[in-house]
Image 1 (cartoon, helix red, strand yellow):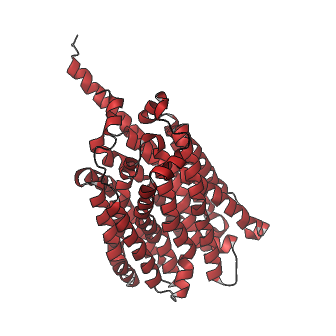
Image 2 (cartoon, helix red, strand yellow):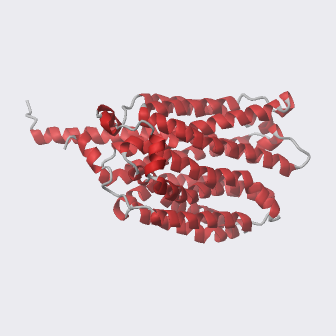
Image 3 (spheres, one colour):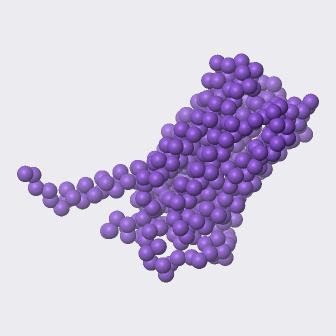
Length: 449
């Protein structure tokens, strides 16, 4: 019988730890994909169908504006969800909060697919839709902080940027799936069929992704770092949010600033650009196809940028991505205006899998490293959701109106992105560099070194 020596046992233990990290990262990313699926399914449907179905008007602009306002409503509920589930994550556990959030958002998405339209029940249809959007925003507010935190606290310090960035893959996956479904359905069904029943299919199919995400999340263990502080109650916080605001107000303000460009750019280049194309009566299929290709590429560039943040530092990668998006925003719209597919595709590749990924990937490790364990979930949730509200929610509420004020010209949208981008550059520059050793001591306690 082959003898197993101590070095072999250590190797086996290290392999098992790596496998655990991978399982947690995959569980978090699939759950995040399920929750992002909803927001992007709604964003696409808002542009293409919901104006007619839920907000009918003699003026198509009013219908589109109302549909986008409902899209934005979800963002206003996010900070509240972030506060509630951030507190739960710090007091009860990261895992329990994540299980609840995926149920809230996932079931809400499924119910949207069952909703009767304005033609069936009148104004009750948009009222119910708005209530569901508020509930979903509440759930998403607690999802993102918990998902990135779970993976960050499991990950070794020297590879935390890489492993944590896997969670961020959930966003492009969550966008890609409903977008691909809508593209397929619109090619197979007539416009009348899409308005009749086709639009419901992506929302109903979301239930499968929710079941998968829930199953995987139930099979992972609680964060080892959180378990450590729960055992040593002396380091617990009775009111995590209060402690965040009392002891880390500067970090929160700078973190919100850093979040702005990423939240704004992803909404701009995946949802708002469709409204811009719609207003100017450009070829929508060109832009939608270009977005899908760019998002597929971003699935692979996100972990690459996460790994780069381990090598170069979180701030350097993040700030380069923010500057790229500020500099390229006007050329982006000029390339879209050509209505040349290759130029549109090139523009999308520059802003999404390069510019956006350089900001989005480091966030998953950067923000958790800014706070101590006992208040980490509340701190991240506050930064994430207030930044998302300003960067994406207000943009979604105002984008169509901005386009109307500018007679369909891109200047107003470009100014919005540019302004938030400059604020982000300032916020990132003022934050401390955290890679790679911020949570090293906590990780070493877990692995027993």
